Length: 324
Image 1 (cartoon, rainbow, N blue to C red):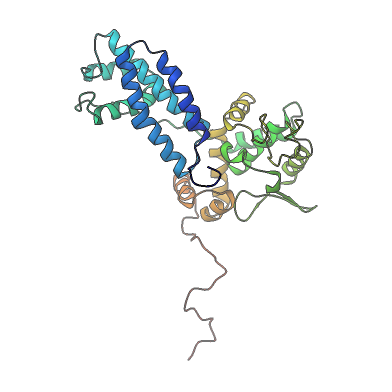
Image 2: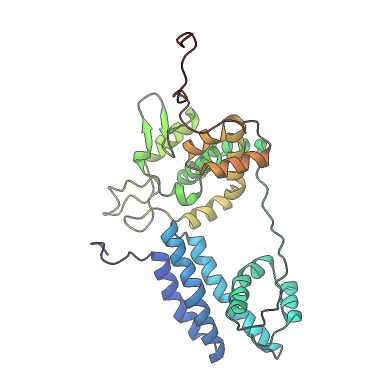
């Protein structure tokens, strides 16, 4: 792999492959084992590999892969209790499952049902009930500012959580990106402090800058021999690795910072103050994402065009220099 002859294998794919045999060993029915193994081999793993090729696999993606397997197993066991099988289940079975289970359970089972119908392991005429998509509302601006104020002043909260929460609330960054930041992404010239999230680097307000610089001077998890030279802004407990985003998300939730809602509030506030293409470049977002959020929020920068606005259009000649 180091020489480039063999492709690198994502660590979360390896984790899933190590977990799967143990799960299969716990299934009593041999036919269920066969079905789940096929589902994992021909659907779940290919989707994980496709995701790894396209970008990278996050802990939440790895968890969802396992949840699909678990809920498919539960569904097969549930069918057996109803004296039914995957091949003989009908619409009444599907409707009953969706009525009895939570939104999470329905979401996790849907890929299995689609795969089963496409591979003709259950009737193709089955209809999967439409699931209502619910989005957690963003924090209000007052709530966002109150959370920022608390993180900047609460000395009882661990500093690494205060810094991570401030980055979320100010710059709408996902934790998967925050944990990949290094101390080299914090630019300080003695007067101003910048955080490199995109181009150009984003200025850090004075109170947040003071907290960030104080944290860098005394980061956590730096005591092990291999971590003493770590450049990660948030070093993890494992040597040479950054903190886990799922673990940090859980800790932020415990101190009252819901990450998804906080990011939604932060990005919408940015879009009220700056054109969407500028926000996209500075915060490392795709311009289509910021444009969509701008439309949803009813912003007034919709006619701002991306690109270098210091250049003159091709063929443009300043007034007064044109031939008369």
